[in-house]
Length: 588
Image (cartoon, rainbow, N blue to C red; front, side, top):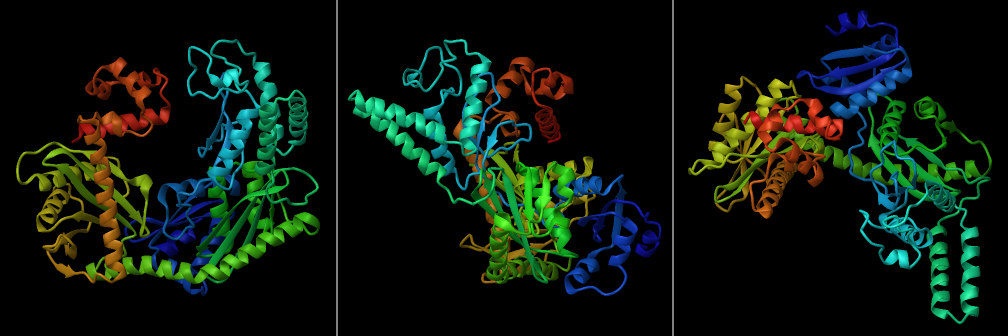
């Protein structure tokens, strides 16, 4: 089948998707010539890693694009959507703080980790939030932008200290704000000497007038400026912003080391070591492109592999260079030394971690006689004597939590002793009916918390929906400690508490329990059985008030058209979240 399909692949640019026996996408790639690239995978000999990948590939799809750049953009979108097992994935929660001048009628300075591409005035990154807040404190003393979240009815202390223009009582011309923003921008780009000179003049004048307390305040501000701007200097010929990306690799792993240079100084560093398949070029471009989906791109990128990162020039309007001499070359060599050090120091640890995670998944597959379950969905319920019943669904992909896919459910209250099984029945029916209706990706394995009764409930629900997904239950002993696993064939397997498999299953179980209990406690703290609106991403107190003022009831919202929500000034994505949640709630 694959050979027949390969014979008809066009010699055009595009993105290709490799699928396993279940139809799951396990690898996404791009190519200038699809036919040449795909044919190369299935002819000749390959190393162990590539061979391992190709043994799980049962089918290949491809999408033709107009250019290799379009193929790269499509590839990154597909990686984010499907999180393929064999691609390099940017899945950690690490974010860098930035200082932002907000784009408002009366702007203010804030520390943010939310980096929308539409934001005009972002400065950073900073190595940590403490450094960002120190700099913010200095700026707030120097420049009279507003400090309050909402404008009060009368001026606050900052106005009387000369640190706010008090737009609450005064009309402030936009040109005045533009001048302040220009000065802040210059300060954050390293031009601090004019500010220091002005403060020194004021300090001496205050001392001459015997205002020693005020003079000390000026001195403290000068010292704070020196502290917040005296980071590691790099002797470059200009003060341009640039990133330095060094790449090192061996036969199994690739190390990417990034220096963020802002105004001639190294302000932060990012590093990543990952296993790769097929080739290092693809792995590096995957990682760096995903990284720049989340962070601003500087005007210049220095790297030891310019051909690998060349697509970034057209994608992000930047310049990729490989310096041959001078300060830039020395900076790149420093980054490359760090990449090599990381490769040497962490390869063994990462290999052990990978073997532990995927080894446990392979052990689970062997125990249950199923393909390796790279996508697992696990459920747990929580309630207090039958009140505020909720359920959680946590998702593990490639043995790690995929928190963006977690879901929480408010359940119908039950008064019978069979409440736990009824709640499990409700949440499983709601989840997998939605999987059917929306044609969502099916997991490789379902895990429920409980013994034979919960397992029978799960089997009954899946049979009613005509869904064939393996399901297991995690049962506890008399001491309420997880002791064995029950499969859908009613087999019971004792678990070795010291094995990697037990640790993985215990982690999944604990995460599902934590997520359920956390949601349950939130509802209890409110003292009422909260409306479905309280669980929807993007719906805060103000949006909730708009919705209830306009529609009065949740039932009315369910019947409302999309444009009726948009008319309230609610963002399109939030409206989609609202309608999806209301639809799912109505299916219960």
